[in-house]
Length: 321
Image 1 (tube, rainbow, N blue to C red):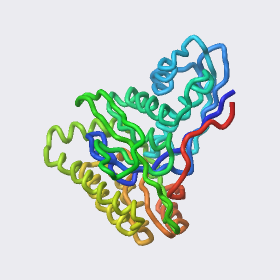
Image 2: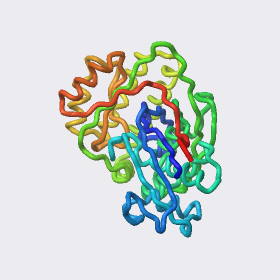
Image 3: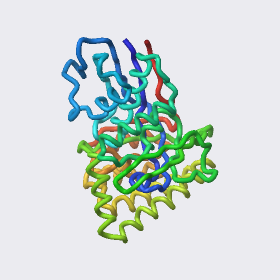
Image 4: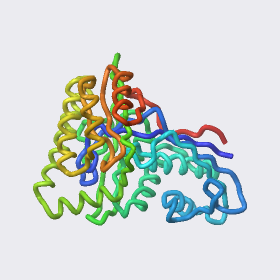
């Protein structure tokens, strides 16, 4: 048996805009997905046949690794809320790729896992996917994804994807968060699912019909650069303020919901900043705070479910083989 783990993520700035070449900044969180793989008589997921429609990521990875004639049993244990903007599908793809590669004696380098898992995400999301989720899950820490890093982060690798809008290229880098007394992140789950492929397609249609909405994506890109400067210098109040403004842009794109707004308003008095995180339309919001227990309490009292996570968490890894 091979066991592999990959963390979820929270996007500080840049969701949706990153699909169109703008930068995004994300951090790994302290919860994730474990994948267990063992030899079997047929390909199964949780004792059911591997179905391309039910598990498109896993099915693609099996074919990508040329393992169709070496059946295995796949079991999944997740600490993440599904369809909630925590990168659960990316964490699953990364952990599964690591486990499959380890079982075959192939490379388990986190960069290789990130690149392959990104392709699996794109397959499942109708050809549109930024490498943000998979890179953050693989590498851990704080990751920056941009068309051109231009000194904003330490470069690690490049990602390329052929999308319906044309070939997209991204630089992937890391920011070293080694500050004392860093705030925490609190994630609040609204209870409503967020469908990434649907929301990405919705934004693509929206900006094709309304160029004013395209300006909102451009503004998110500019705000992300501002937030990144604040993040690298440990100016946490400025980081929070940038999160607040980013949320307003995302809300103008129709990506928030009444429940997400309720949770965000509930935590604002106790937070440096708060916004939706991920593709929106449901899923999670996030808050940056020095009072995580109080913020979590406010989320729970408002009908959500809370997760407290530090600003820095390790990336994906093999647990046993």
